[in-house]
Image (cartoon, rainbow, N blue to C red; front, side, top):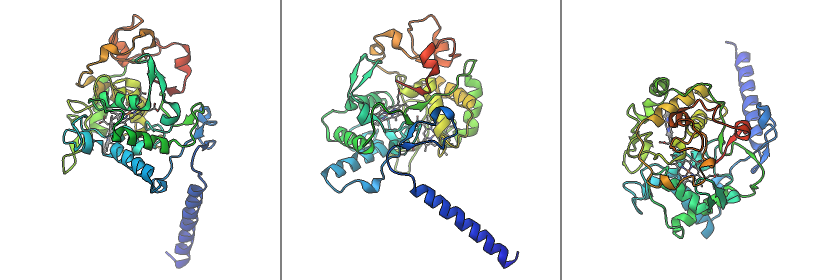
Length: 335
Ligand code: HEC
Ligand code: HEC
């Protein structure tokens, strides 16, 4: 190739790099209009961008924010089976499900925690504080024990949520909050099909037995377990098919985002059916959930129900028959 060709290629590359850089710098912190998104139903939503960790102040409060973030990223080091504070949890890290320390669209981000709580939680028919919600994940997703709400650790979680959600308004819907509502299949999700998807797309990291892989020092996981005694229990959000499918579609295999999904929605439903058909620890307080049974979500896998659809259909679908009006129209999974 001639020198001029190289020059042209280099010039084009430089333009692309400068263009990307300018584009990145034009993204302001805090909510912004997400008009560029191709999905018409989301066009008008504000996109939330988490503040940068380099902006955490060097104050007493900044120290708590940093500690809260550390607890979210490396929970197991403090509360796992080899935890330095207590053995309150199963060895997962909060970040395993709240991707990138809770900053990712459709990665169970923490944008609205401070703005939205205390929040009515139909699961217990009561208002729940931020501490109460953290303990919900401690007792279910982390299959562990509630933390003392006055502990330094709980205060650190709260400080981090407050910092991360600065300027976020409770009643303004944000792009990427909650979990994405996937289109329903008009059949039951199929654990057999899901097994094949799992073996081809997930087993390389999570293990064909779903047990995950510990990091070298064995205090936390490199690849967290998906079922078995160290996984989330049957009272956890991910034990509901819609939550699992939408989390996986937008976040797995690791590195996947909403903008570059690997699995189709159909594959996400089927792999969810496979993983959630494998053994998960029981949740002891399950009988206290849903005191108003008519509030129970369509895909709560544990009966009884207000309707006459069988437990298997509530767990695997088909869902369209079960769901009524508003819920079917909504774009975001709530509660
Ligand atoms: C196994 C996955 C998993 C793990 C681990 C996990 N969570 Fe969660 N968490 C979820 C899911 C899923 C939701 C949404 C639940 C729902 O909609 O029912 C959630 C919701 C929350 C919420 C409420 C968010 C909101 O905007 O309403 C908070 C706060 C939270 N988690 C904190 C934590 C903390 C702190 C930890 C670690 C101690 C943790 N979670 C560990 C899966 C997990
Ligand atoms: C390249 C390795 C890799 C692959 C492949 C992969 N994962 Fe993961 N997975 C991870 C890592 C790492 C995490 C923890 C993420 C974090 O902490 O940031 C995770 C977390 C999870 C979690 C939440 C935590 C838990 O243990 O419950 C689920 C559920 C999950 N993956 C499901 C899947 C499914 C289903 C597939 C296949 C479609 C898959 N993953 C493929 C690496 C992988």
